[in-house]
Image 1 (cartoon, one colour):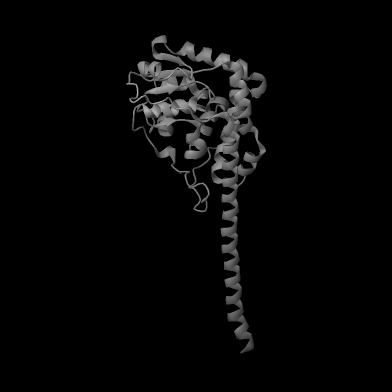
Image 2: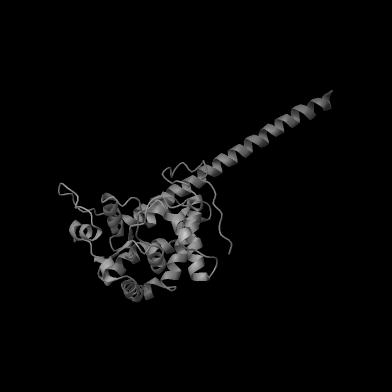
Length: 290
């Protein structure tokens, strides 16, 4: 399948003003990659992203980088997924540098689908593994990301909206491929296999396994940076309870973009037809009466 081309954000997308439209295929690395946080999503990766940025590892890539911050990133993720799972094209260090050359750290999915590739691409980076109890992780993921990857409203938005048309196919491909076609059935087994694989790829001195609640100290010691001053609390973001509401609100805003674009385009077309009709009548009608 041919790589999907980049297209600029429509000027009519006024209900999602925060979305940027950077074409990462034209980017290059501008900061060193220092941290690969390869714990699966729903193990505290959003909180970890905030913490890493607080510690100076800016920017830190996360699924939010592609889903709501710069949707065209999804085009390169789709290329990476096609190369890995379908054998279509190649995706190596050059492409990773294009995709997140502005980042000193990465975390969350879909990065985790490429743990081996990223460890090989950035051998100098330290590796973090956030983890949690597998049963609570599976239950949390079922109610959040699994729901998002399979919900019909997002599929509908993807048929018409600029951002959703890039995000939904990428998310669906990642979710189906990484969990071997069935997250509900294979999720817990793949969880264990994944963590075992990462542990086997990284020397013990370059790996920190971390659970939310352990605070700044072990993280800062491993990354060799000072603990934030003033008793600053470790961040806690992206709680499960608000996930679905945020996603549904995003869907609504995207569909409002679609409606507004249709109104503008339809109104402009109607104005053109109306003007042409008046001109025709004025010219040919006048000649007929002469």
